[in-house]
Amino acid sequence: MKPVPTLEWRIDHLKLLDQRQLPAEEVYIDCRSTAELASAIKTLAVRGAPAIGIAAAYGAVIAAVETPESTNFFKDCGDLLDVLASTRPTAVNLFHCLDIQREILFSSSSKAIAADRLLSSAHRLFEEDLEASRVMGRFGADLLPDGCTVLTHCNAGGLATAGLGTALAVIYEAHARGILSNVYADETRPLLQGARLTSWELQKAGIPVKVLPDSAAASLLRGGTVDAVITGADRVAVNGDSANKIGTYPLALAAFEAGVPFYIVAPVSTFDRGSPDGAHIEIEERGREELAVMAGRQILPDGVEVYNPAFDVTPVKLITSIICEKGVISAPDQIEW
Ligand code: MRU
Figure 1 (tube, rainbow, N blue to C red):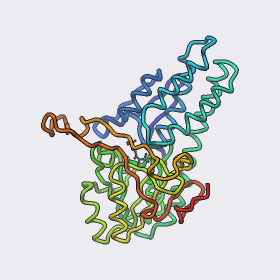
Figure 2 (figure 1 turned 45 degrees about the vertical axis):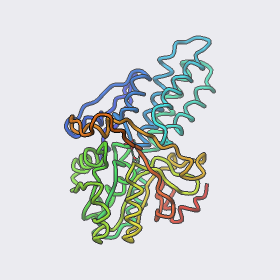
Figure 3 (figure 1 turned 135 degrees about the horizontal axis):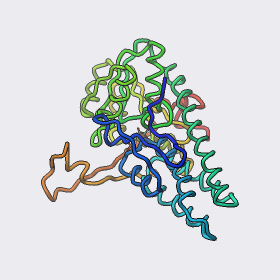
Figure 4 (figure 1 turned 90 degrees about the vertical axis):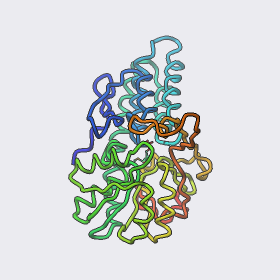
């Protein structure tokens, strides 16, 4: 099955499906400078941990081309990589991909060689992510019962990766095997990645999906009709604590209380040796306007402040298994690093 055209390198620029416009419009933007790409990542034109990382890897190519050839080339280009790294703090894939690109940059002997090697590396990261999503889909589907009903949160699909996604790769594979009966997608306040994006891509793939308010998930789980909760992650800490879109933690609590397995699907590029546990994961806080305005209408009185974290951390004790491209980690508090 064809992955969603989330991001594509075109000779000298990165073409992105503008996810801010979905589902109303399927429009593309061309990023030809690091400033354009940094803004696209910050404003969620491209989003989802693996997709952000790969976009930034191509951003390093743009940075190398954009930086004038001079004695300062490597330092100036490195500064542009820092700009890309400053866009979003939680998804570790961004730093993983930029670290790889930085090493290539600083081990190159000229601008032309750096640009060439950075492009090959970005293509390789794209292909690795595509393959990881295929493999994770198979591992995850093996865990699901025949005729299963699953619940997912945010968008961990083709829109969030180079391939078919992480959590949604499992759902696509279960559908292909004929074992999937129902998919529920949390709407995922405040930016509605579930309502706008997950429902869009599943519908496009011919998979029926029901969207529910985030606040309805606990009672749905308690009702006993859901066989598994499956989400992606933005960062997995050494002890297995996992950060994902805000609302994942309460979903995991509700799944635990209802005795429903809670699976995280994430490629190894989302695992962070630098975070011993969830308390060490930086959680992005986003702007007031995301809560103050809905569908173009002001919904908060002037002057009212907001608390708007984009992610939360699910403690490992609530996670049944973590599925990565190397297999199923059924004791996620004992990951072999
Ligand atoms: O703020 P977003 O839309 O980038 O958040 C995305 C998520 O939280 C996803 O669930 C996560 O990146 C996993 S995507 C394969």
